[in-house]
Length: 236
Image (cartoon, rainbow, N blue to C red; front, side):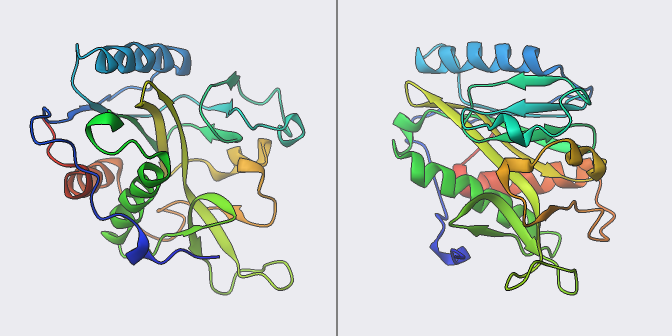
């Protein structure tokens, strides 16, 4: 079942006295364990009032992550890339060069302590960002992430061909979020073949470049920042 775009939250603003969200972009790939350690420390500092909220944009070296719902049978090629067990929600995902990862550390107590609405706001952020490139992203009630229809592409009987372009996997601690989302700009799509992404077998994976759009990482970052401000409020 498709959730209409109009049904997603248009804003998830913080209380008026909240500092702007710090916006960080890493130019070099960041090792996954280092990123997780940094996020956990920052989330703890936010919860204790020692740091402002933060969004961190980065790329990882090629790797697989296994979320709290991961099925070992979905790790098809366990020796292909390093595999990291992680505390975020969800199943197996791939991260690697050409994929923009956005780690989102927000204090939901200062916004709205409702994880369902928060996830919907993240989906809105992705969908509105893709819309800047004339890509129609959609969410599905029966599977996570953001999807694009692929007219003319072969599909199983009674199904519409769709590919996943973005993934979401978050964790909350004391109502502060960490982990976040990823959007495929120009990753090696064959790297996804080492897993069953998020446990979904009937549909594939795509990217902005795979869709025929010459979008750069910088182009996406500009769109992500603009649409984040529209939904979540000002950034530093």
